[in-house]
Image 1 (spheres, rainbow over the protein chains, first blue to last red):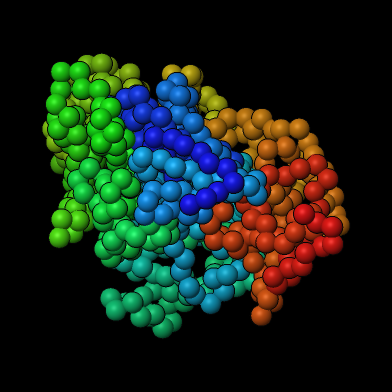
Image 2: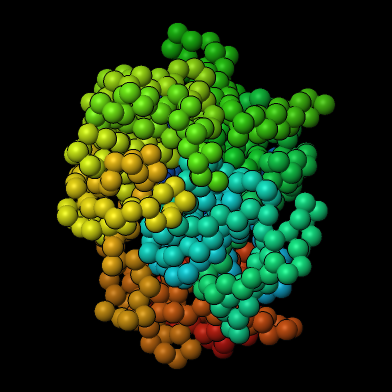
Length: 369
Length: 160
Length: 111
């Protein structure tokens, strides 16, 4: 492809979130020339709004707050000479690995030997009458507003969805000075960790299982919601409707991958609702069916920041090996890759992780079929 | 949720100290019932009293040896560890709670102690506020309440 | 201090809010306070403004939804250009922001 400005790099990474940064650092440590492209004005993806302490083990930096990990990654990226092109939209990813970039209205073409797509995810919405009213927003959006943008969009909140995002954001809204009247959950049980639910329950937040928001009401923006009990067939129980005054509604009903560039490049997809929707298929080392293009993080299935980081690291190591630059230091390449896969496996243990592990195994097996 | 049945489950879990140990003095109470890959409590305990082992989804086991340092309370990502001291005084127990809100209460403040469901339990008092750089924003607030509520009280609000 | 200020000045984890230099922007002709480095949506929300635009067909009010520049619900007319994602566009001194009606209009001379 001909372009006005031609850039060259060994490894191009689309997305400067935890997965992209970790892939960049791993590759750069092995002497690979790395360029990250991100359309935002600041790197870090969704990592900097995570002000809570992460789970996992010491090697996963457990007990450290998300934004602290973010700062460590940025420092490492700088230390290892990773180039980061901010305010740059990757508008095209082609099967020959060419990337089309637009920065400040100027178009450039980036040619690289390998690509990692780490474009993350977007929040789902929930349709009910009035759902488009201003101040009915994603829970992650409220989290961005309070923890990154330092502004409180509302003082009386109701949250829909009791997965970890709904529970954690409800806690963080209280930290930011809001009152969370309730967390509403359609299923008969909490979706996230009990410890996250305990934190807010002891602060007086009501967690209502078997309920849903049926209406958002207000003239120009949300002023109240109607909630109702639902039965095991998800039908509204007549007479259980209740109106609650709120000025902010947080919708936490899951995320889905932002995989447009993967489609464009010709990747194969598999639909797995447990991972958020259409997932680009990849092998056990994160390489997609388009040779030379790797995927990492939420774009390959909705999980957590820690899994995004470990998948990024795995992709970075795999790319380094593919370029013949993997520094082995008394270890076989296969053992280094195995260790990285083991660290990932640890994060997918237990009742909350097992279904994700099975789903990822399905993706890998689809790669080989 | 978080009612007496929950408390019974907690008491049977490996992270909850024995009645015998609770009677002896300040001790960590780990309220962690789910298998989540997580072990910073094990890593941080200076007495090596907390065991998670492998796989790291194991529930933390607490062997009752506790110096009351509170390091586990501060590092737990789930804010699921408390300190209970049934020997605080003849009539009162002291409950230490991880606290990440502003404003921090002050020593001597009158409070209403709350249970795990956020319900009012009894009146109490703030005995101690521990904060500082090493806490990394997870402060420790110690409140005193009548002894009989030491298994119930896990949060508080300022009395008007 | 602005009574309407919804900015989080002191946060239990993030600490004190160190703001950038104060800049003046206008929203529908009214001057509002903003700080260099913050997004347009931030300044608007901080001043109590929640409605950013009205939809083309049914004239429904819209505001923030994703806050990370992916959904385009927050678009407004900025310095004569419509469809600017206010959640990821930083403020500049003298910026003119208007509620977008429908798909908006390009003003003469805007670039």
